Length: 329
Image (cartoon, rainbow, N blue to C red; front, side, top):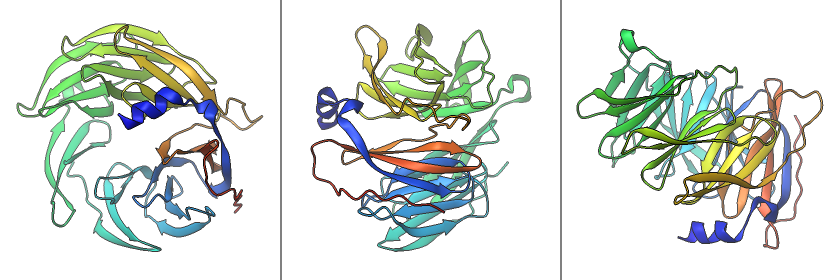
């Protein structure tokens, strides 16, 4: 309720730039998130994780991985999980400027978390409540006749999962280990930098983001009920749900937009955006990840294989540090 009240009274226009952290990574930033203590973390295809001071935003911790980091997040226990190259996980626990690797190199075998491996295999891991570690539970593998690369997976309820691919949506019953329903899009998604993500709104309305199009799917009836096009400065590149009716979306060309969902009319519309200007001759600059905490936004900008930076926005008229710290490497 608090999140909804906040977003009913604020738009992205109420935020201002707090800091720009220039060229913190030497390759694309894959994920950004907040640690439990409020510090920002970023991961990259340059095989590194960086942890930043909350006040100065100077780099406090550098973690070097063996492989490209494709995804990173913090779970409810405050454990930072890095996923590398679709095959390995590392788990980190932080205490001030110190950290410990509590689990290393879980190799996927060909939770509770579910992880996509090579786009065709979904592996499930179960968490031990005492040790906070994960152990391999089971897997679902696409059969050869219906092989279709999976781009995203979303947990619905009662061991029901939705699998997203370039051409269709599949509903997986994990208890029975079978696909119960399939929805065809009628068109394939072909792009070198696709946003092909799932997001559940209002318990039964599933949003599918594909390039500049959003499909709204009724998961009870298993059918598409609406198709909406929203184009800001490029295609969608990532999505982040901040309340029951508000989604923050990343776009190509250094832009994020605020989308409002109306569950009665089944409509999604753009109500504000920031960072719309494109940097000349800088390529796509994909906003690959967004994170929000304590009225602060962080996301990558000028994000490409030659190097990447972070930009941090704060809510206006609130007390935060006024330090403008720019880091170059």
